[in-house]
Image 1 (tube, rainbow, N blue to C red):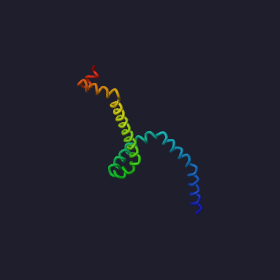
Image 2 (image 1 turned 135 degrees about the horizontal axis):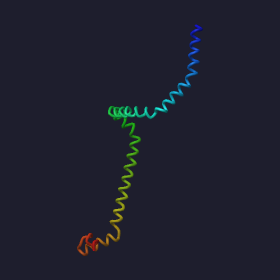
Image 3 (image 1 turned 90 degrees about the vertical axis):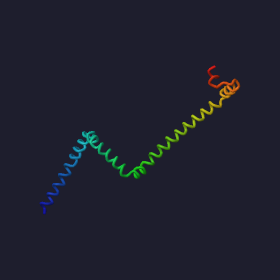
Image 4 (image 1 turned 90 degrees about the horizontal axis):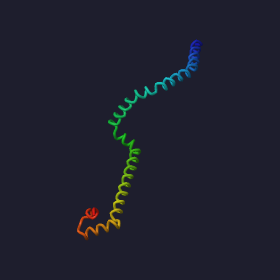
Length: 119
């Protein structure tokens, strides 16, 4: 039995001595080949994501809604704000004193506003 204890103690000592060296080698090799690993894994991940989307659309929509919902909300709000600004600008330009004078002159002269502007 003492032979087994010696073997276990020797294995533990060897493991403790080699473990840091092996970890350093693994880290060094991973750093050196990180780009290669990423380029090989990327297509697999893309395919897995596509399959996941096909098979579990509802779960993915539920997971993405908090992010996508706020993005869509911001986009719609900004678009509506721009639309309101355009409408306000058109109303202000359409109701200016000069525009009203031009409309009245065109009616009095019996010509279109475009003809009046060209004169």
